[in-house]
Image (cartoon, rainbow, N blue to C red; front, side, top):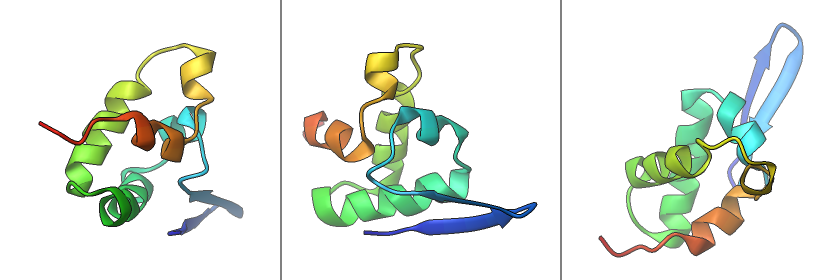
Length: 81
């Protein structure tokens, strides 16, 4: 599992595949890229595909969707074009 760790003003933040949409929406682009590169290794497709899919999935204000873990979302997204 990839962990992208940033230290900003003494606050540590890491985005992992166990995080959910709330965390995804506040993560930096670099953190999203790191998580999506891990998804690319395990699930196929390039990381741009995963960034687009996760941005679209988490773009709603619904707690059921936003509370879903990244890895659970990835398991539900079809890989065919």
